[in-house]
Image (cartoon, rainbow, N blue to C red):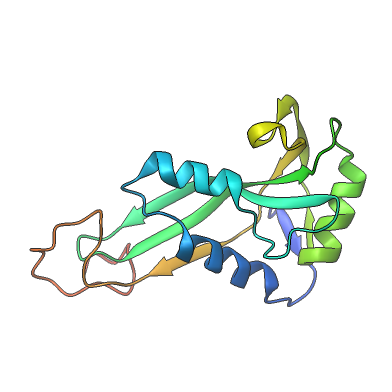
Length: 156
């Protein structure tokens, strides 16, 4: 049996709602360079205070022919803001306190600094999904005659 990569220890809506807010404001997937810059620059925390920030590091984007989009977080980064070294124990405590997460796979990305030398960072996985249903999409043709599917994987 596969163990989840992070246990959610509270029902805080903050993580999921912050994830959704970030992706709702991000440039669309059709603009990969602008999207990558946005996701490297803007953290999940609206108020960026303290020693750490959380960023979406890797994502999986799926779109139905009707224009519904599902984005899954594959990996997130926790950045030791302005620090040249990464303290995994402090980062784990931050993730637990701020988001209610206990990542089992948190590990430092050695020899790397976050975007524009913002600090050393670690990566981890936790379930997060953003879905948007729209009649048109930047990824699909506006001539698509079918209405958007509620489930990008449904094929409807």
